[in-house]
Length: 141
Image 1: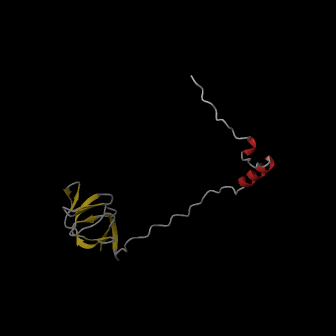
Image 2: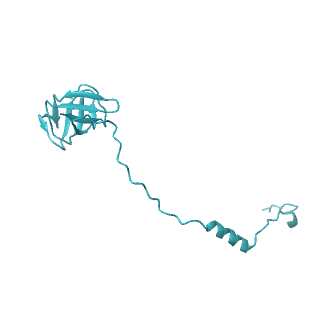
């Protein structure tokens, strides 16, 4: 096997660029300056403000709940009630693009028709126009 020959001419050491080095004491001072900083303080979060209502509640009304789902083919809103409601009472559905007022003609719990429902019941109410998730449902008096 033949060994490769090293380059014929090597650069002399004097021709190499010499780096200017700082003395050790100067380096330590520079590092000390960099390390000095104010101690980290924990960030304090501001108290959460109550959410602003998206709609203005009608006068003499009670909040029934919020539209959880709207079924377009059958025209039904699904919601969990916060107050009792019965067939024949007037409701109003309010939202960003929704303003619907009607009487409750048909109401179901688990696909079974009912005439009355109380708080914490998940009901489906037949409506005449489109509603959207998040719309407010009020019981008018």
